[in-house]
Length: 120
Image (tube, rainbow, N blue to C red; front, side, top):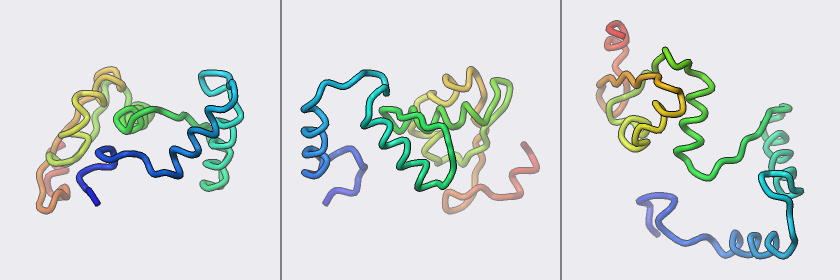
């Protein structure tokens, strides 16, 4: 097992089988297909709400788009200096928010020290 990341090993056989099955038919592109509808409905069922669902290809896109929905261009995202969004997203949050800043704070154990929030 390799726990370095969720994307350093191949796909599970069950995933490959599902892709092969889905690939057998001609489907409409850009989310206009029955497979996408099933996923959207399953997500709504799990979260027990009639949410809009937007499937994206990467974790960076998902993280950054979620922050963009919550943060205006003149706003800021407060995060720990060692957080994934600060160290690994490579400017994507700033791009998708159209300019919101990341305000990075320190704290032991990768947790923001509440006293540091007074300086934001």
